[in-house]
Length: 163
Image (tube, rainbow, N blue to C red):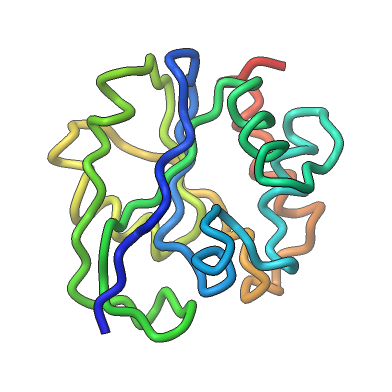
């Protein structure tokens, strides 16, 4: 079954760093917002990178991104996927990143995880003429990476955001 990405990107004209995921998980699709699985470490990690408390509500999560110059979206606009498994993604159509890139002064694009990175390189890198920094996935499926180890890699974002 083909699924569509059903919620908009988070960005403002002040966004300087763009973080891309692959496609919303089942939990994220249920909540209509990014990184909705309670075991996903994305929000806890981003809060630490930004020097803020962990956001709980969708409004707090949006505010965290916007107040620190972070744009958030996914590589894929629609695809066939089994549950939340990135490895099952087929027949992907990608989001038009110009929506953000033409309206913000994005200094660096970051990609959350290997599958998102591969999709970005395959479908978007050449089209937009920009590269991305691959960061280790915050997914609970990436259990080999401790929170501290993830933080060590994700700290690179600090040089591109407002603190």
